Image (tube, rainbow, N blue to C red; front, side, top):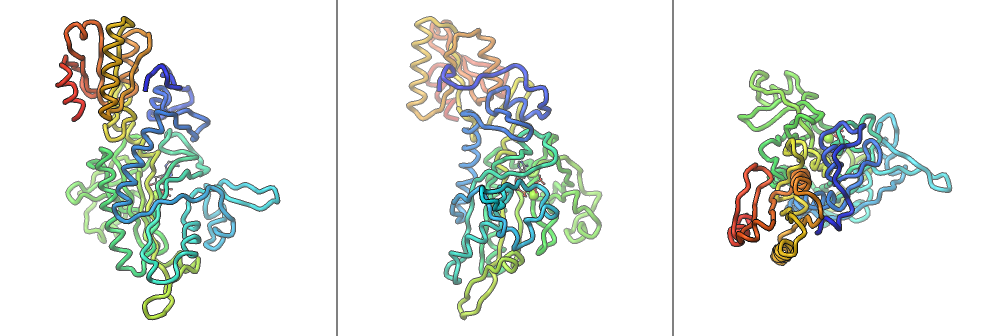
Length: 416
Ligand code: ATP
Ligand code: MG
């Protein structure tokens, strides 16, 4: 992609009302456009990062048997009434609206009940189970406060997966597989080491749910880490009884701020009972389906990556999620420079290496500042000097030193 063709532009200042570092940088770099507090649009640059995150999640969900689908954003009131969750006293983040004929409908804040209702039409016998479905969908939540940029949206993208199993044993096996799949996801996103499986408040069926909490100063949660055992406890459930049941002591724990990047729940048969979701087993007996729900905050993860990796010069993307791998800056508008830069651009693209090619007629300083702000892993500079020397100037985003390389060494570096 040529910078001259990008619909977005970088800017020096973020909107005055934007206090979160992640949104400030993403807006300045042109990845995100702010519509209102807690509501952000993703530009051609931003959507590439989101799609890369989604693809990693998709691969890991498929690997454990997940099947992708997409549910609707408009939801029926009676679906939620079966579990009592249409009530604003029970769910305080609802956005609700009405059809022309006055029928009340809700805007999706979750799809738990909606998926169960759909699966009821497909699951009849044990032969139809287990079933694992997931989607990437926009959730709408009327959050009271939205000061964390894209880490807490009133509209945000979630991956939500649901498991339907015949027994507790079958459920537990998938639940454990999902924990491992989530670990792989966060590992691939570069936050594996800082992401902890965390004991958090459960539901009607289980004492705890499991959250995936990433250590992050800008996060809204507080967790207590046990580095030795590699687990953590959300402060919500920090009491002596719980610590005892987990076999850990208070003085072994370290208090840190964190962001909840995922949350998984065992519903047991509670929701199936409320919604009459059953199946006929091998003996012809009707039984209730075991349910689980597994979320990952896709847009929140993007915010966390910004918060954790950005530096004072701008965004820093890992190769796994970056919108383009290389920022190619051409200095000057002379024919020889244009020719050399066009040639490298084409050669890299032909090799499947994604490039943002800064072909604008602007000062070198502006190009360098934008390269840093945009955060691609590698910067390559072509100038009259480099062309004359038969070299390219190469710099990693995370390094302050650049080096001059011939084309072969350059390609070897970029391939890493
Ligand atoms: P929180 O406690 O942060 O409000 P939650 O527990 O209500 O989140 P879940 O219903 O468990 O959220 O949703 C699954 C995942 O979706 C969360 O783990 C989080 O990563 C993400 N998420 C939840 N709310 C938001 C939001 N308002 N904006 C962005 N991501 C969110
Ligand atoms: Mg949660």
